[in-house]
Image 1: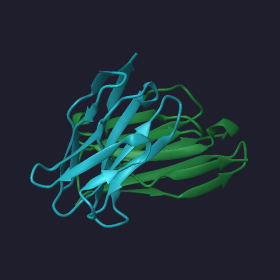
Image 2: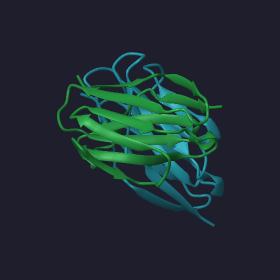
Image 3: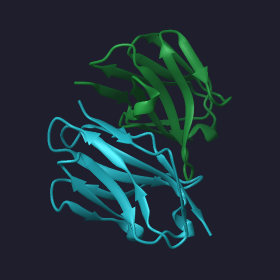
Image 4: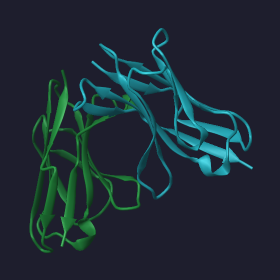
Length: 112
Length: 114
C-alpha cells in the first residue's frame, strides 16, 4: 500500500541556519509531490509541487527551495532560515490532482 | 487502496437554507472518516469524525454527517446555513490503522448568500 513518510516531526532551528526536510513516498511510481505550509492562524499554503524528477514549480516566492532527486523523494530546503519560516510543513502526494491528496504527518518548525 | 472524492468543488446556498456537501470514499476495510473546515486565513479545524461507532455523527456548529456503507458515502449536512459557515470543507479518510496517513479530498468551497 502507498504511504508517505515525513521527518523530522519537530524541529527548532536558530535564525540563519540551514534547513532540510525530507519526504518519501512508498508503493507508487511517478507521483505528484507537494510541499505545503500552514503558518499559525493561516490556512494551508502550497509552496512547491513536482510532477517528476528534477521538475519543481514554485507557487510562492520565498526563502525556501525544493528538490526532487529521486522519483519518490521530495526535499524542502533553505540556506538561511528566517523567523517567518516558522510553521507546520506538510508533504503530500497524489497521482491525479483531481483525486485529492495524501498528506504526511507534518513537521513543526520553530525558528528562534 | 483508500481514496476520497468530493463531488462538488463549489456549493452556494442562501442563509437559512440546508447545506449538503457530498463525499464518497473507497476503502478496503472499515474506514475512519473525518470532515475538516478551513476558514479564510485560519488553520484546519476538525468538524466531526466517524470511527465505526454510531453511523450518524454530530459535529460542531450544527453540522452532522451520516456514514452509509452501502453507498460508500459520508455526506456533510446542516439544516440551516449561517454566514459564518462560508469556508472550504475537506472530507478525509484515514488509510489503515490509527497511525495511517490522512487522505484529503479536493475540498468543497461553501459560499453563503445573505
